[in-house]
Length: 176
Image 1 (tube, rainbow, N blue to C red):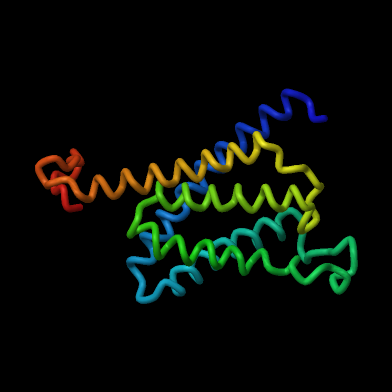
Image 2 (tube, rainbow, N blue to C red):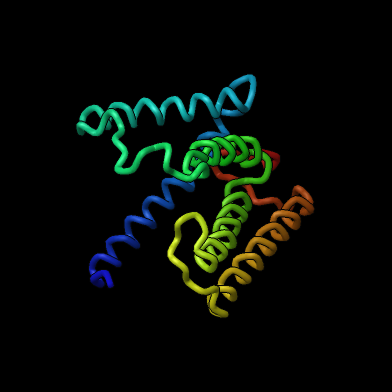
């Protein structure tokens, strides 16, 4: 069992990383609106990340990658992390400009939580088995309910007449 201070540090770093991750779809979405095709924006996004990883790997002596097990012995799904990243980045840069960060991230986090319950419950993809307790399932149900509330709020905001729209003080045009 980790120490309480380690848990607090992990939670704080997780919150900070989550906040940073929460900005990524908006950043990529803006990029996507300013290039000719969403795949170009995704390529630029992954290109900058790859350049940073290469620089850090060279600087720390972690390049080239070295396996602790033969690469050929790893399960095929091990190699799909980058492909999943492509799906996440590309879909977020397409949809965040249309639906906003809140609805997108609420859906993504809920999807992550739902699959995490299954991964833990069945021990899939190398996870330690941890039963889907009623309390965990309740948490996931509450997340799904939260997404529905967020989507409904977005619908209601779109239906408001312009006189009731919230005006951004830096841009008084309610249509922006």
